[in-house]
Length: 223
Image (cartoon, rainbow, N blue to C red; front, side, top):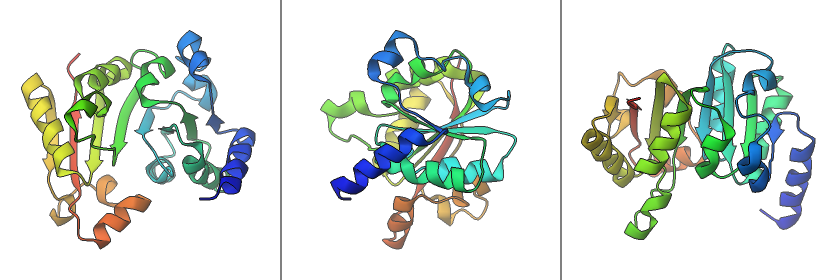
């Protein structure tokens, strides 16, 4: 994408009522919507997050299917989620928002037990050992999610990385967490949950065309 297009999208994001773009300092020093997302959406419906949302395909598609829930896509790259934010506005979806921030600040963005569900869609597996701290299902990240999730909150992990799937599954089992569902090639499972196979991201479609297996798991974290 050219720099002119990126700048255009950045400017448009600033005008979108469904986009929130705090600075890092604003997040750390006291984010205005932490604990107040019900006020943002003007209802107290359950909130689902899509972490590393990219173009926001899951955020928007799930919002279409579940008007009784609120959905927030989070990504640091505003030029990507511009597409999802614009689509939500064009379709009049009032239950969609996008937050531009780093995933490691997620517990600064939401209060304790404010979130009902988290989707982690196609994260960078950060395979090198020295990159473990950036892996979105490492113990430090799990603790952040544990803080913001309701006691019965659910986390979904959908990825094309068998390494990420295996790492996360092994970690969860080692920590004694509750794995509700796990499959190493979800599109070969005729009983796969519709919410998993019924929505596909831009990159996921490319992976499927190449014949790459898509893995999926669903789990809870102990309180």
